[in-house]
Structures are given as C-alpha cells and as structure tokens.
Length: 460
Image 1 (cartoon, rainbow, N blue to C red):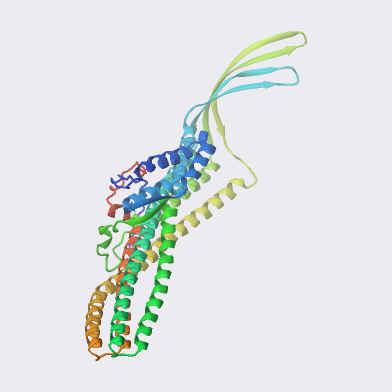
Image 2 (image 1 turned 90 degrees about the vertical axis):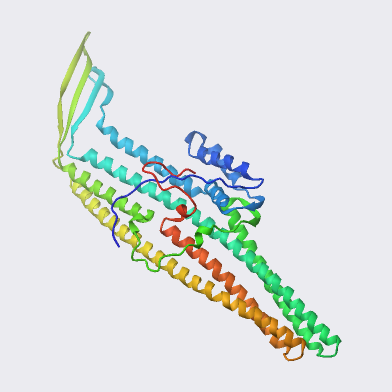
C-alpha cells in the first residue's frame, strides 16, 4: 500500500450511444435545464423548470447506460459539485489578480476646503510568498473539488446500477415464485386425480391447496418489494419502467483475491483529501509570510484644489515610489492565524488517513461480499440440479404410491429454496462488483468511459 501524492484533478467521459425507446428526446431538455441552473441570471426560472423535471414519466424499456445518463441529468449532487469547481476557479483567478496592477481613483475633501482627486496605481513587487501561497491554496482546493465531482459521478453511477440491479432481482424472484406456484398447482392436480381414483385422502388435496395459498401470499410480498425497487429507480432516473435490459456483462469479471495490491492513491476521495492537505500547507506558508514585509510600487497623479479665503490654487502633483508594509504589532493576530493554520493542516492530514481507512474498509467489505456471493453462485448450480432431479423422482414415486404428499411438498420447497438462493447469490455478486468498482474508481471504465484527461471535466 502506498500513498499517492499526485492529485489528479480531472476526468472526461464519452457518453455511449444508448437507446431509450420513446423517451430519448427528453434527455436534452433535462441537461439544458441543469446547465441553466448554474447561471445566476436564470436562477429562479431555472429552479422552477428543474422542479418540473423531477416529475416521473413512464417508459416501456430501459438499458443500464440510459438509466445512468438519465440519473446524471436528474442528480442535484452533480450540479452542485460542478458549480463548486467553477467557484474554485473564480477564487483562484481572484488570488492571481494580486499579481496585476491595481488602479483606483482617489477623491477626498477636508473641512479646510481642500479637494484631492486623481488616479493611483499600485503594483506588487514581492511579498515573501503571501500571494503565491494563496494561489496554491485555491489551486489545490479546485483540484479537490474536481475529485469530489468524480466521486459524485461515480456515486450516482453506482447508486443507479444498484437500484437497477434491485429491480432485476425482484423481477427474477417474482418469476421464480410464479413458476413454483404453477408447479404446486400441478402437484395439487396430481393429488386430486389420486383422490378421484380413491388412492389418497382429501387431506392431500387440501394440503397442496394450502401450500399454493401460502406461496401466493409470498408472491404478493415480492411484488410489493419489486414496486418499492421500481420507485427507487424512478426517483433516480425519472422513469417508471416495465422492462429492463440485462446488467452489463463487465460486472461479471473476476475480482482480486487480496486487496494488498490496490493503489488507494487513485481513489477520488483519497486524492481529494490529499489536495485538501496541500491546500492547508499552502495556507500555512502564506500565513507565516505575514510576518514579513510587502514591497509594492506606487504611482499617482493627484489634483489638489486648495481654497485660501477667496483665492483658489489648483495643483497637479505626481508621486512615484516604493512602499514597504511591515507589521510590527497586531496584538498577536498573526501568531493566532499561524496556530490555526497548523491545526488545519493536522486536521487535513487526519482526513487523508480517514479517507484511506474508509477506502480500505469498503474495499475489503466489497471483496468479501463478492467472493462469498461467487462461491454461492457456483454451489447453487448443483443445488438447483439435484433439487429438480429429486422433484422429478418424487413425483413419479408419489404417482405410484411410494411417496407421501408431504415428501413431494417438501421437495417442492427445496426446489424453491434452491432457485431463490441461486438468484440471490447472482445479484449479490452483481451488487458487490458494483460497490467494489465504485470505491476503486473503476466503474466508469467498466462501462466503457474513456480514461480521464488532465484538464477536462466529465462530459455530462
């Protein structure tokens, strides 16, 4: 494990061509409204329009890529993170402005009737790193905001895929339950045939009917969970969907057996914390420099209009020189600022360690969940095969009178349990792969997004 001090600031994204049947035309207005919300002149009108875009509409089909793009257009977190970057860029430009000439117009009037007015110019010569430290601080903060944006993009992508996976999960279990109800109806039919033939009692048919009723109740519970999952996905994408495409095949790739080879320095949250630490260090340097003098070049051309009783004498005076600003005593203010800067730097270092530990913990959890789910997927194949084979054997033996109905109902329950476990393991593996890719900042690459460039923001 190594610490990567290079804080990369940027990411670019090439949006894949996706199909949103009958709904593709709605994406462009959503993105336009998002961009309008970033312009102060349209703040309130854009706010009203954005509220309208939060309405949910229906669609018949959705792909994972389309769901992600819709979630990008709908997410306030991305708009907020993007605005924060723009704010950071403006603050960096403000810090750089200290290097440029400062021109002002002076105007004063005294009780003695003297007027003084005219242009003044001030140019910074040297300040022992005060301005440089301020610029570095804003530069690193902007890099931190860019990494925060990348975290937000990856987070929205992961949340959307997890919601998408949840809908697919409950759709799958609903289909399994329907098939099991049909199988139990078949058992019930066999029991009724045996009853009509005088080969069994009426209790067999009643017992089979009871199992069918119980599984119908279970089906309604799963349908309710499916509805909840669809609502969650609709809140992220703005679409009530009937049918979903399969999850990306890339999520089926093998994950590492161990996490000791993972580069945590490439994780946006860690890189953001590192950038914050560098910004705090720059502030410390600039604060220490406040003990040192500031040299500036000054030039002015002032017009003095003096009133002496009834006579007035207009005078133009040119002044050129170098000024030195050296703090001598300020009541301990500079020392207090330096102490604050030290504490802020220590806090930022702790934040780096916290981000590192969080990444390790989330990575370890995702890997453990993935390997556990992958093992269950492999073992459930045999479980499903043996349960289906046992059911076929038991049905034949029940028809011949060698097995009781309880045996047949028991094996039906085994089949349902095997199919349910197989489905659960499959989607648990999907979810673990998504969580791992989110924390490792590899999810966008898995979905076919280009590697990040040096200066471009993600193309939303």
